[in-house]
Length: 123
Image (cartoon, rainbow, N blue to C red; front, side, top):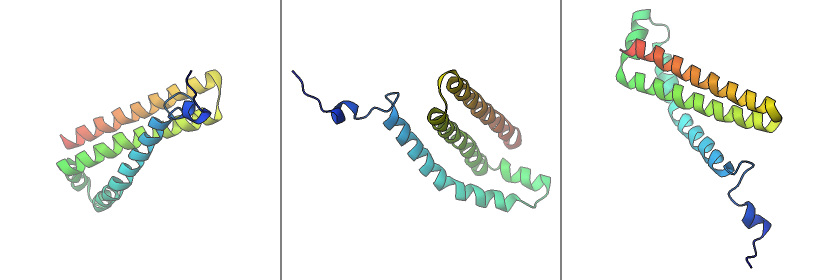
């Protein structure tokens, strides 16, 4: 007969069995965004105030385009996971499922729109 304590049975399991994985994903994406956002804001700040041609030229640079793509993708993924956590905490039943689906659709739609606009500018 195996004897497992309550702590041993619960270790590594959140409400859906993926609590630790979700926690580390949010922690890593938060740290990654904290590292690239200042660089992105400085680059955007330099482009502000310029003419349309100057701004398009700045975003056409490969480094700026890659940085902007990373911010769009990882920022909106971080948003979707954070919003899902909030929804899971404060809503129940069918409403929860509908809201989670809506947030996922919104975030992936914004990612697609942002990357499409970036591709139009950069190419």
